[in-house]
Length: 145
Image 1 (cartoon, one colour):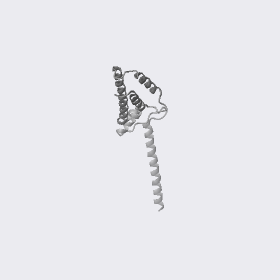
Image 2 (cartoon, helix red, strand yellow):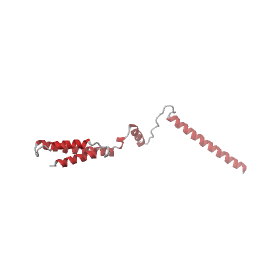
Image 3 (cartoon, one colour):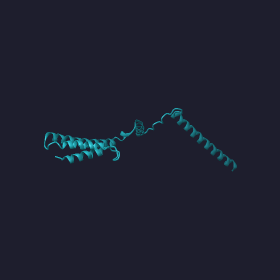
Image 4 (cartoon, one colour):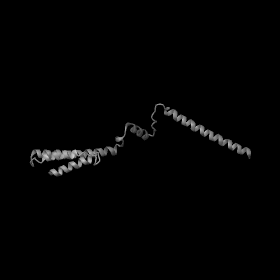
């Protein structure tokens, strides 16, 4: 059977460990509320039904907080997309199966497929132009020789 200070410290430790805020940002009201609850529990006589029920409730709360923290850690570990937006999940899913997710359509901008085709045509034209220039140089050298 744990003493009240031990139960208080165990409970407070779990609240601190489960907190999503830094120490500075953390609310001071939780320790104050816990102190009030445990101060009221001091009036319970040792071994009474109420004291045993209080101890059981505190132990259950500590176990719940530990389990909650463990569950959160396991979800983050085994489901890495848990913190992603729907758009990020879709991009990641597409990459997993070897596909590239298309760029989002923007108003006033030509659609993606047309943009890609235009880039391909431009690259092909540049390649054709460079090969034509190279061919002309070869012919010129051949003619001069």
